[in-house]
Length: 375
Image (cartoon, rainbow, N blue to C red):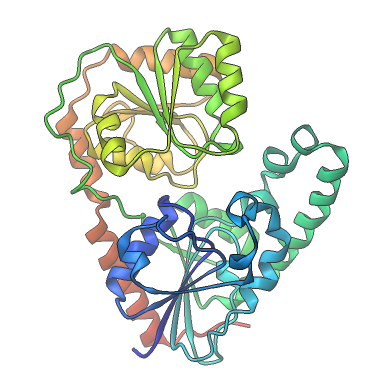
């Protein structure tokens, strides 16, 4: 096969994209990893053991606290990676990794988590005037328009697209005019399991999420207040101070737990009566981790949730993205008797082994076909 390069936007924690990269590192053990920024110790030992190349962003003082604000620089930084000696390049991309420049005879397979949300269809949630102020928002609007043009123009650098859901495949078709194969992302169904936990009909709800705008955590906070059900929130991010203020002002029974270890997250899943996902996700690993632990999920009936949740069997899908609709769904779910064994069996269809086998098969097929970059 020759030399293999794996490209990932940045390595600052073990979220869904990093779990994809982890399986790629297992399947291609001699591969080298290229990323804009690596915070040592923030990702799994499997990734940390690889040879990791970073961009000049790595050397800026205190960059871990503001690297997202460097977004307009990302296209230039990713294009500076020297990938000329690699025969196979696999990018794991939710931002700019897909647009790295590979050698003229290299095969480039991109696992696209999503076309950039903030550049294409969620600008206001990230950079709207209410969040940044009029002048900074106007500046970012121009920058994101330029970034979207670059994103579309460089879509042809990929030989073959693979993505995590039919929902994102439609977005790739819309924004890049390219087709994408669908391989659902990996869930560690061995680690995430029901254990010996015992649940009662009443209990608390749980959110496991980065605290960023598009996750719409405020909907879950208000829904649980209306349903009079305690809510526990695992995760960190820039939205935490605002969400804490909102919960306090509304008198909601919410506990912010911050970032937890995998063992602690698994225990939270096992103890929860329900896991909530009020935002529209491209796919969403959390609902499947919860289901692997035998717990039902209440999620918005859009995006990847419709592909990972079986209505009335492994959870409830909510049509309206409002606190009232989610409160009603929470009450309904707490009154039901979900079968944890059935929920668990559904989640096992999304295992790491299944993901690795399907990705390897697609890469091998692409190599045989010799799909080089299409520009």
